[in-house]
Amino acid sequence: MSVDLQALLRDAKVTEVLEKLDRELVGLAPVKARIRETAAFLVVSRARAQLGLEAATPNLHMSFTGNPGTGKTTVALRMADILHRLGYVRKGHLVSVTRDDLVGQYIGHTAPKTKEILKKAMGGVLFIDEAYYLYRPENERDYGQESIEILLQVMENHRDDLVVILAGYKDRMDTFFRSNPGFSSRIAHHIDFPDYSEPELMSIAQLMVERMNYRLDTEAQAALREYIERRVQQPHFANARSIRNALDRARLRQASRLFDRALEHGGATGVDELQSLSASDIRASRVFHAPVTDTKPERHAHH
Amino acid sequence: MRITQGTFSFLPDLTDDEIKAQIDYALGKGWACSIEFTDDPHPRNTYWDMWGMPMFDMKDASAVMMEVTACRKAKPDQYIKVNAFDNSRGIESMAMSFLVQRPAEEPGYRLQRQETRDRQLRYTTESYATARPSGARYRASSAE
Image (cartoon, rainbow over all chains, first blue to last red; front, top):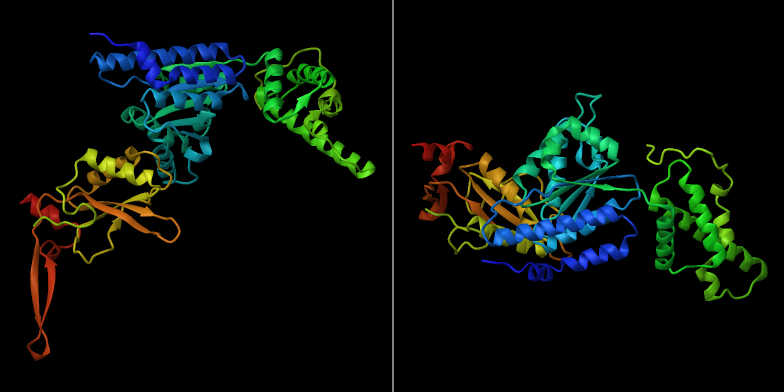
């Protein structure tokens, strides 16, 4: 008896998703490697199941740890796609929730709320962002515990129906898993998302600018590079998210610059001008006015 | 007497896989499923008890099946049906409604004749089961 792994891969079109992941996400080499491993594992288990070597569905619940803006939600979306193509979830949609969506405010409110979300996620992937907020040890009557118990029960009994991905900061998730051994024993795949390096952030920025149909000239690129260098060292840095916000603010400044000029001088504004972000749009940011500190603050500070 | 009503009333009872397939069809159409149960299955009784809220925004039949299972566990000796509601403009009504559980024994109906003036007869049917108080109807008969 034998099975054609390549055909299995081809039929499921998993390589397509993996290539898309490679193309769309900058950096994240360890994450991509782990996703590849997981995909390979899933393909092999599928093949083993076909030959009758494996009966039970493998445990697919995962935890994604990393700082904000490192691509956890995006990767979760791709993961849902991969799981769907390999037939581990029937519909392949992603339901993204936080504590507020699961935990109620008064007695008897939590269970229906949690069940409602679980039912919506069935056939797909449930993504719980900042999952550690579910557990509040300082308040022993916190309803989060009730939600955790229902989650654990469904994760165990409905393995075929949904996959749960827990996400959050690394150290807080570690504490969460330590205080909830039920979770750590039910989660097979832990994937850690590293922070982006400065060149990686620059290529992310360039990708974003391209997708928004803007252009950066050489000067503006230099300004953006300098911006990133400074921004990384300031508090509340959220990787790709901070870059996106910076670009959004630069677009605002560009708009008001063009607007002011049109009001003053009148005349037509060309496509070229509408498309280009200048160095001044970027350099007007408060990041350039804040003093640069000598010591690099902790990159994974909480806020 | 085996009571039939709703969609598929002419078919034998659906298996769980068939129920799942029907629910998947309904969800695929964008209909919202809900579950109702009763121990008064008179054909004119349209007010069954609701098992929880109607389920909107579900993607997969297993979510509805989870509730069906829970309802069966809580009401093992009553009639249970799954409804699919089409809320699109201008339709706004049940598109599908079928039984997913029936009691082990169904005693059937008595035909009642009521004599009115001028020797006229009025007919009505009454379930033998409803002679007992609600909640004790089918349970008691299956325990004997």
